[in-house]
Amino acid sequence: MKKWKWVFNGVFIAAAVLIVLVLTGELRDREEAQTPQKLEGFEVFCEGEEISALYVEDGALWTGGRDGVKRIDPESGELIDYVADDLEMIYAAQICSSYDGAVWIGHNDGVTVLYEGGERVDFSEPEITGGRVNTILPLDDGVWVGTMEGAVFFVCRDGIWEPESLYTSGNGLLADPVNVIAVREEDTQEREIWFGSYLASDPGGISIWKEGEWSYLTTDDGLDHPYINAILPLGEEVLAACGQLLAGGLSVIRESGGGYEVADHYTMEDGIPGEKVRWLYLDEAGHLWITTESDGLILSPDAQLEHPIEGVVLTEELGLSDNEIKRIVESEEYYWLAGRYGLTRIRKDSVETLLGEVN
Image (cartoon, rainbow, N blue to C red):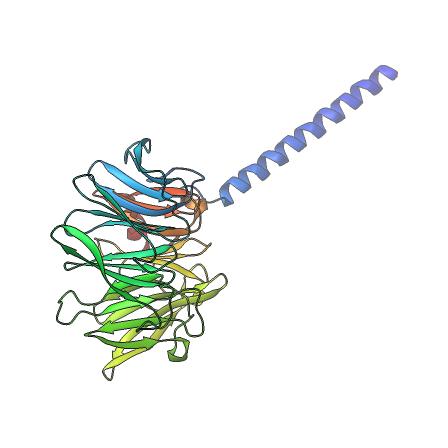
């Protein structure tokens, strides 16, 4: 009798274990089916590193972050070398080149110019306005640099770059912090320079300089937020990415009566995945990238936006290094996305496939 009792108990335990295994397998399969799959053509380099600036050159990709400026192999993601390990770049910064081939690096202590011949020149306060450099705009007749305490226009004389004009709230800007600078017209006779401020709300917004005259746009004029993160001129319209933390949106600005007005708005209700719009990028194929502070980005087939925005939302779950994308550049085969926790490389043909599924 005792023997049969042990047999019965063994069968009961085995059956219970089998049921648990089956239920666990079903639960795992269900969770796997519900978990978004990483998209094909997405790869992450520099995992865990904060990337604040990107610059593409033949055979290398420059990245700027807390540990300086380095070059990586665009195919393997491996480190090639350090361009400058003494320059710290956090929150906002930029790397770009001017018309003479010099490379400009904006960082926490000012701006550094690397000439093609190898010479390095560093500019800091009081030669330029103080605070970290947030943005650099190279033009065909000079270079604009925006800092936390104003803006500087550089000119090149006899092959040497030097600051020519400094601007603050005391001589034209709406507010001292300049977070982004954009140009609306390439013709020097009709050129407008747009300056977006940050961490300034009384007032804060956009300053527009044209032929020595200033005009302004603030939240009183309809901007979604006084903090401006990106400005993207698009023909007759200008897009302004606004916000901080859990507030903001995308403002659409158009000419009106000889000036400008905020004519439209896009928010989370229109498909933007987060409140604060972090960065805007119109790529060579005409696709518009709208990134957010911590909720990923929406990629639209073109810049002809409608309510709601047509496009595909990309997040960390789908293959981004993280949900805060701070800057985007592109090479012949890839898009490169600088994130708070790494660098995302996306094949261009993968993007076309994704957008083809949207249309």
